[in-house]
Each structure stands twice: as C-alpha cells, then as structure tokens.
Length: 173
Image (tube, rainbow, N blue to C red):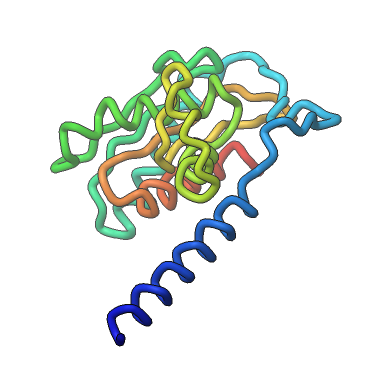
C-alpha cells in the first residue's frame, strides 16, 4: 500500500513539473514588433583598441588569480587580437575565439544561447551555424554600433563571463 501511495505521489509530482515546464516555454510562433538583437555593425575595432581590451581582461584575470585565454574579433568574427596567459588551458584557445566570433556575428552575448538552451529548452539553437551555448562572449559596442566582440575561456562559465565583462567594459560604457 505504501508503495502505491509513493508511486501515485511521484506520478502527480512528475505531471505537475511537466505542466509547469510547458507553461514556461516561449511561444515560438509569436512575431515580435521589432527585430531583436538588431544593433548595427560599425567599422572594425582597431588593433590598438583590441590590445587594450585584451589587457583589461588580463588585469581582471590576474586580480582574481585565474589563467585565461582572451580573444577579440572584428564584426565579422575574424580574430583581431589574442592573449593566452601562462598556464591557461590549451583547449580554451579555440573556445575563447569561438565565443567572441558568436557574440559578434549574432550580435548578442553568447550567454543568450546558454540561457536559451538551459533555461528555455530551446535546443534548436544548437543547430544554428557556429553557435556555442556557453557564456563568456560579449559584443563590443561603440557609439551604438558593434565594432567587434571579446571572448574569454579557461575557467568556469561564470569566471569566463566575469573576465569578459571587465574586458568589454573598456568599450561598452
């Protein structure tokens, strides 16, 4: 008898959770009035400014004792500057570049894809070309136009994002 009650409670709880999950799912058929993430592209970031963004990220990473890879790309997503701190993991070299490229090309922080997959269950996002659903890529916006993006990798997602945010703050004021 106790097993039956337990099974019934478990089934009811599962049904409730499924109902809540589908109630929170976004309406993919809704048509927004304005285009989301429509910040226009501007001229590419200069090499000197890109190096300054790298140095701002390195300064934040050093302050926290984290070894990071930091990439800056132009609006097309092509590499403009790169910094690899001593002892930063090798796998994160390409990941930092990938995060920056996605932030520039899709005109949004790479965290938007992570949130879309993790929080909203929008798994179709993973089928889009060149997407990475991991935080740590932020567009660089100067005078209302995207001039590039910065990507950081080497720690946890939250560590990558913290360094990336500090680096991007040099441009995104």
